[in-house]
Image (cartoon, rainbow, N blue to C red):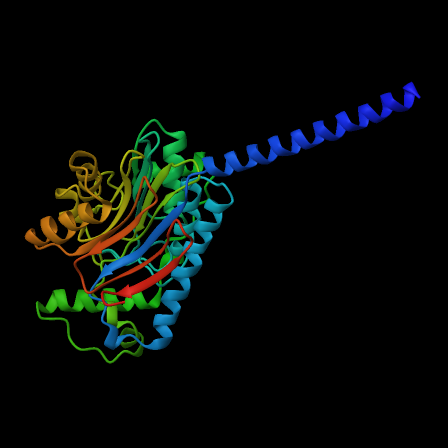
Length: 356
């Protein structure tokens, strides 16, 4: 009798303990989920004179497809608990591999007929950053910029020195020709012919040039900004620069504060446009600073710089951004900007033209 009562009482205790444990575990899981910061990501593939009437439905579909693929890749990293930096790299490497953009494979030619690539990445938690410029033999400049952030005491490495560092970090060198495409070669030759004749660019009958004439004056760069479940912001930008550039010209893309900036206290920004103006205006940092010092929204800060400051300087281009509350915003003063975002609610947006 006593043994039976004892066993019965022990079973009741066990049941109660199990119930208490389950309730505590559920509360812990809910608390953990509540502690996760909402995630968001935005990307761009360059801004400029992108004319809807000259773009075929097939080409438009190609651009929208790669923008969707790239941003979904980065968002998948974020929802799986990955860092904003990892999401940026996943996104930008896909765009560097696409011949549709002026970054990596598909980059524009310099004056010597070769490809020179620039990239930068910055994390908002530590304000640490890495950048590379004028590299010619590294498949993914954004990955090398990330290696500079992680493994170098310096912020920016350029040219041959950057590639020596790359080899020490295990990167393989690739042939410069691997970046070249027929589309970019024809664009380069057309500009060289115009430069030599000092005339306006002539009309072209080349089928490949006609196919892509809708964005002949696009200021090509790719970039991404994201915030992860820890509330950490990262921003990255990668580019081939300007067609026919010479003398080792470097634009804003690898310049921290000009083409790329991230600060957990305000926002992350990646820019695309006429780099000389974006450097002079410190565009990326200025937007974050306006948010911090004036207490204004990301959209308002972007518009003040892009629609105000840059327009007064007669500069064309645009920016993407994500703020500390996972709000996403775009601003550009050109006819179009290849862009996409997934906001904190998981809504996907893919746009090209101003009126999208």
